[in-house]
Image (tube, rainbow, N blue to C red; front, side, top):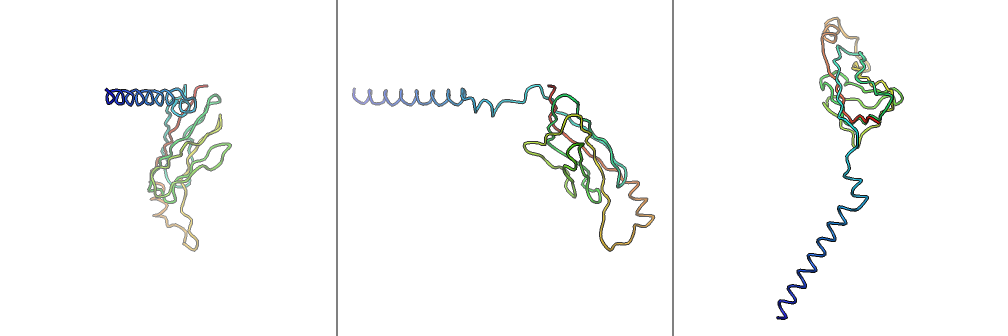
Length: 155
C-alpha cells in the first residue's frame, strides 16, 4: 500500500509540474512576443537587370506608408567588382563581390519613400592600363542581375 501511495504521489507531482511549465511557456508575454509574426506584412521581392559596368538601376521604391525590412540581396557573382545596393536616406548598404547572396539578420529598415538602387561596379586596380576596345565591348555585352527581398508592412 505504501508503494502505491509513493508512486501515485510521484505521478501527481510530475503531472502538475509538467502542466505548470507548459502553461508558463505558452502564457508568458515575452515568449508570445518572440514567436509572434509581423502583422500585416507581405514578403516583397524586386529584381532588375543591369547591362555592363557602371550602370545604376532602380530596383524598388519603398512606399510612403509602412515599413520595408530588407532581408536579402542577391546579385550576379560574376560582376567584375560586385554590385552595390544603395537606398536614399541610408547611402550604401552592401556590396557583393564574388558571392551571390547577402542575408541581413534580423534585417535592415529602409526609410519610407526611399529609392533602392543597384549599381554594377567597374574594377579599379592601381597601375593597370586602361581597358582595350575588346574589353569595353565585352563589358557592354555583359548582363547582370540584382534582386532584393524583404517584408513590406501595410500600416
